[in-house]
Image 1: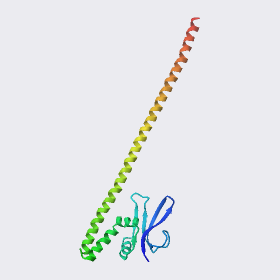
Image 2: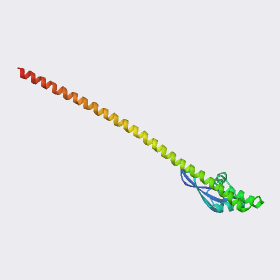
Image 3: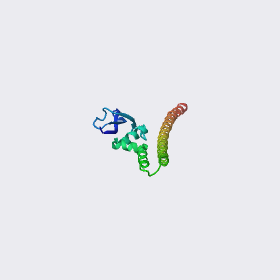
Image 4: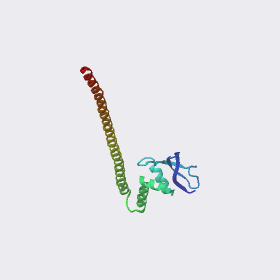
Length: 179
């Protein structure tokens, strides 16, 4: 039986999330599985990946073949790096302490890149929100100015009408007094 590490789709339409599973290569995508290794949610930014690192490494050392997407996920989480370093230890290229040191160094660099991306996304979101609020403020000010102009025009028109109404009355009064 050929074991394959692959994704099993879950979630509703247009909102997928996946289980990372070890399954027989002949089984259907969402069919019978041997073991669930983790969860992958591509809808978040950055994508959410929860993985049982040790079990995934165990399956890889036993000969399980990952699908292309799962291979990228395992590479992202460092499982393939760890497997590569363990093969170097088996061949005698370096000892286990050196392998652990290299892996920890790689892991720290990877985590710093991920944190930088998260911070960058948060900064970008704040910047976009600030720009949106500024644009909204300009629109609000323009509307307020237009309303003020309209009210001023109405007040001027009302004042003119009042003047016209008061002037003829006073002239009529003058005519009545002259007679």
